[in-house]
Image 1 (cartoon, rainbow over the protein chains, first blue to last red):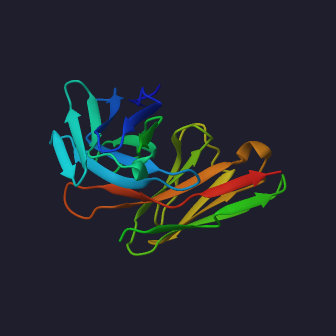
Image 2: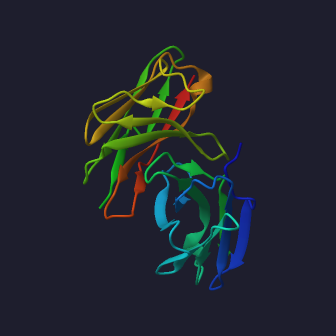
Amino acid sequence: DQQVKQNSPSLSVQEGRISILNCDYTNSMFDYFLWYKKYPAEGPTFLISISSIKDKNEDGRFTVFLNKSAKHLSLHIVPSQPGDSTVYFCAATYNQGGKLIFGQGTELSVKP
Amino acid sequence: GAVVSQHPSRVICKSGTSVKIECRSLDFQATTMFWYRQFPKQSLMLMATSNEGSKATYEQGVEKDKFLINHASLTLSTLTVTSAHPEDSSFYICSARTTTSPGTDTQYFGPGTRLTVL
């Protein structure tokens, strides 16, 4: 039972344009969502998070949007840079700090 | 801040031996640490939750006698893979939980340990 899904295994965008990574979830109990990026043979690096009481959180080039009614969140990266090329994971948790449930990941490629 | 280290980064061992992996939170105290494993091209799967001073909570399907977890202090958790077999070869990653301010709750991950069992 995949509670957190990233349906796009890969995404390719041009440098300077917007990257939009999507994530869907099924468990309505989730109340906190996080995005991580991960390079091969390394641990995930935290990017940005959002609580279920919000619908948007912004940090520099990264913005996360949450649509609770649709059980959908997205990560916007603008402008995209070649150094952003790697795998991005969304994750969800509930009860503030329970275990993280990860999506399958989306590999972003930003072309110069 | 929020740096988590893991040691070793890579280990190769013979089948039947035990391997210990350390996870340390370097600049914060973590009452809770988590252990994940990741197979190639797959997502991170939680193995167990490690609470300082108490027994770990294992996810369904994870053998607690095979994957021994000890969380002896607020900055150190260890995972011991006992009697390792080739199917245990994987990328093991730990994380440490911190709450920097009310309403936030973030896990910071270590760099991972690549275990190869021959």
